[in-house]
Length: 303
Image (tube, rainbow, N blue to C red; front, side):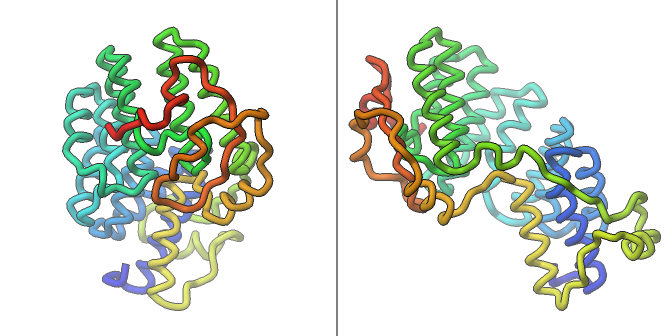
């Protein structure tokens, strides 16, 4: 963003922020804001990633793929690999999706990215009718039923869904329960039930009209004091789009203190070290069904 003029950086940052706010409830409008940002700052990595995310949100997977590859080329990062895999699935290419997923070093990914990739890879296996292999894609070190991290509810729910497809209903019920307990422990239940968004930006996204329409908005952000603040706002907007439900270390620590055990008996996996990440709340023990991988956490291996 520092390569942009102050005025252009400010307007771009505002569009990214509005895309972040609208992505869940009004994806089409969020996409319009992302397009407006891309017209102003198409060579900025965070702008291309935001456009990719909003394109994915409206089901334009071909555009999402194009923007995701551009983002990866500009930034040199693989942190959007899960979305690339899922977008390949969206255009009907599960084989290509698996190739993309296997082409990255998973050990170098952040835990939340690695979990998202495992879920996407599992979905690609399901697309190919490989249900057992889909289950195997989810058997990663982060699959710890007795600790809750920000990624745990989605991972546990994905495993429950695959087990249900396999007819292993008892195990599916166990992981569904774990997902619910993790959600409650992290304080996520009901957190995003209602969000009021006032769109103070433009109705018409032509650059010539941007200034007047921003001035007439009651909810437009105050002018940024310098270009570094513009960059921070843009990056914050992109992070919010990528994961609106992300919880920090403090919320996890608070959840740990408040969480009550779900049953009197703790699982043997309590002693397993947590993955390298922020401290997480320990979940109340629920005895896994006989034969479930949860009964022996050492069986979980990275796909």
